[in-house]
Image (cartoon, rainbow, N blue to C red; front, side, top):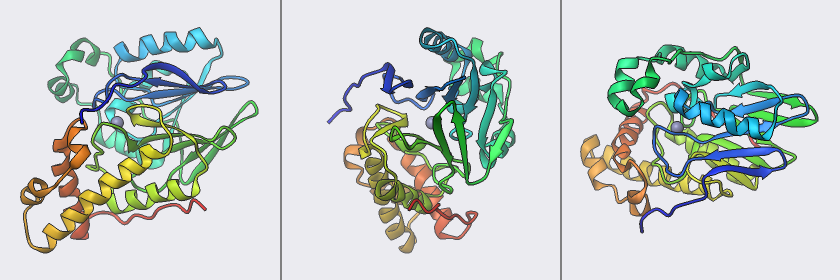
Length: 292
Ligand SMILES: [Zn+2]
């Protein structure tokens, strides 16, 4: 079954809480969200380049003239965090691990241009802008009387993931802890812990409206779908690892089912590779936060 189309553009998912959703689930474009509070705006994920951010800023300006006070990076990947500079003088906020990884990874314009030549003009404007404010486990921002929780669930998609949770509105911005119609990617993450984190969200976090990093707004099923993919890949990888099969063999043996239709199914090999590293004890240790 091919992947369906979904509602794209700006959507008000709770009073004064918006999701800016792209019509396809590519690795170059992430969803963004913003929250209008009493005295300012918080943006969740900056996106990547000027040609994406400028039309978005116009959309925000159509909704509110309050200043953008905070930009939260859900993690360090370029599609989410490379556009930070276009929101200055807002404070950029992320988990410490996200800031470190962003600085560590840098922004090599040549490599980026090779991968996405369609943004050729944009790359010249790229200025790496890591967080000015970081936190460790949890931070609460009070935007007027709006309560916004930034939660580090433990390493999942990356070692610096942030969930943005609005307990009053039961809204959750998952970043890439949940994917919809784009294959989940664990190159910088920890799959077994990601499985624990996703289960924790399903069992203990009271959320009814979720915006994933890529794909449509949904209910908790976006987390279940991501979880099922991760479990499938882990189960098959473990079997093949124990048999001494190579990463390539394990990847070829994978029966992806519905996930074969998701964008970039070939990411499975990167995920198997990461699991092999995990099975060999090569990854830094990881612990999921307690959601209960
Ligand atoms: Zn992403």
